[in-house]
Amino acid sequence: MISSSHLQEHHWRSEEVPTCDVENSVCSPELELIDNTQRRYNPVNLKCGVTVQLGENVLRDSPDIIDIMNHDLTSCLSVLPASVGWLVKRTHIWVNRTYAYGNIHAPTVVSHSTAHHFPGWLLWVQDKAEKEASIEIYNSVEYLNLRLHYNGCGLMLHELCHIIHQTTLPGGLSNMLVIEMHKIAKESGKYSRVLRRDWALNEVDTDVAYCTLNHKEFFAEISVSYLSDFYYDVDGTGTVDMAKCSPPFVSPVVLGRMQQHHHIRNNGKSLVEWRDLTKFGRGLPHCNKFFPFTKGQLRRYDPRVYKCFSKLWQYIESWEDIDRRCK
Image (cartoon, rainbow, N blue to C red):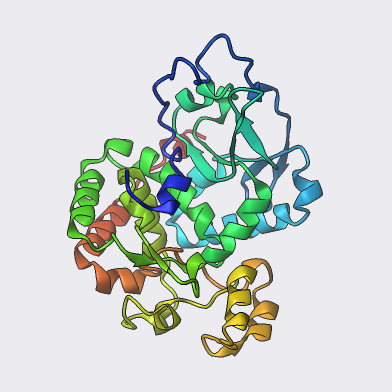
């Protein structure tokens, strides 16, 4: 297993149904299991055209969630090609306040976000099969915090890119170009130690890039960088100095560390100015959490991967959405 706290933390994001453990698995018929099929959701049609399904207590603990989700999805639609616009709009987003599965007496609690490609995982965790081909946020409060490390919509864009990967590319999730390029990129060593923005000003601010986990995460992660055609001032500023090559920070956690370390400037503006400009991360375009953070940095850092993703996204731009044509 890759020795990265980030990869370990998101071990199940690939949603592959694990092999049953006779004594501890949720597959054991003797265990009393959490029934997630009984979860109740209220559908909300956002202004951008996407439907979000809000679970119990989401609005109570995250009163800005509707506004922020609309902002993130609108921003995603603005950077994605028009060919996938209807695909995005028909992809439901399921939002939970908290989520757990398995043994009622020893549940597994998850708080990340994920794309549901197939019903197998959903059935395994006793959930609704209708969530297939959708995105789920397991913890609304955690989502609102984590999205700030992407300066807004990058986290949602990552999940949408999983759906786009499956739906638009030849072979879907088994697209050979993506699989081969993931192998080449991983073996190159370029992604074995990269900067990650949520660790800025920690004693250690580098990690194994999340794109190395598997070819599906490779496509989603690199796409977020490729679609971040912004922050040109950080192009060519290197790969190892966070202060030089990162777009500005908006996460209160990182801004707090900057104050503690007396970094009173954040890419040319005072911390107060950035707080006013970027409330909820709405004032800036997205970037990635892991280096390369932007399209320009990807182009310089890994020209081969950049060229591959240029071809992939050119194909996606020309993709014809049959479901829309039939409407």
